Length: 448
Ligand SMILES: Cc1ncc(COP(=O)(O)O)c(C=O)c1O
Image (cartoon, rainbow, N blue to C red):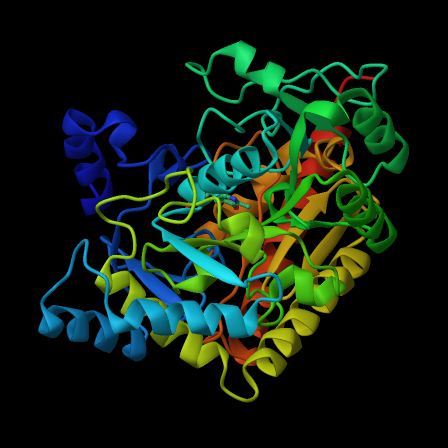
């Protein structure tokens, strides 16, 4: 038996599904991939199998694996000694770096994860406005807490006359009536948004969105739609929150808000903020952020928030991002990869579309595109996608898939090279051809 399968058997004795987190179980493989070590753009599993990594820790490992600057930062934290629940000059430095880079970030509060950051942003918006409801968009994921984890699963809510769709909790255990505090709206649909605003504005504290929604693969906001949302929120004193947990730092240092030139009132950051260390932040306008204690009545704190290893790791990561040429490299790789995939789809006669901005992308097989909202993303050909993903993984190109029911995002790191991207394209070509041929064989053998 392989070491990996043996470990899986042992893991099942003590870990649910053999994994420490639901998303690390790989449904198409039937087990998690137990990693032995990672370096740069690659990692090795416990059987010694090498993978070129296009998962990159769900986008957190933006500097690849075992980056020397992050390793040094963690050693420095150990040297300093005050690891947990202490405020240092380094916290100030990190907040300054975020404020320099991110347009809305007049003030910063640190957290550990993206989930905590969106929870905090919602609390701040409610405290600031004195209102209760949150408008979110269908398919946008903002973490796993009960306030907002609705309508990004496989089940689609009924479309209603007030422009919203019926809220559907994405996890068992979430009380359905928490959905009463949400207005869920189709993305990039100005008419639906306006109707929902008219119906709910008196009780709306915030509009939250992924301005580039990588959690549906990669669905960017239409610029005119985004500007409209900005204008409506300003006019009605609704707090506009960009959840930039994935889009932050992904294509330029200021994230989606710099990319679009549209500034939200608050934003949440994680993942590429720290290059793999557990850190997140809520940032935004001084007057809104000032509802937080000790200045205001809203509380957001925690034993592990701003952990020194994470703070120093994030400073090291941000220092790399600020180096000349960093984003030229990211965007050159992006062009090469996404043009390359488009070429392959065309050359192999496979219906599909790739959408990517900066270092992350979605691939929609069986969809002509462009994909502008969740319902369009959800019709992709799952059987073909499964064959493609497994074809890649078998050949040593790691693309992850959390649940194989909703669209997935993939991406590279700053230490991937053009040669790595060419290698990935070569594997994708073989996997796509195989998936296409398997589909043709199945179709040919169907009874007429
Ligand atoms: C846009 C967005 N918000 C929030 C989260 C939750 O972040 P975390 O997994 O760090 O809790 C994620 C995670 O992928 C995300 O993509």
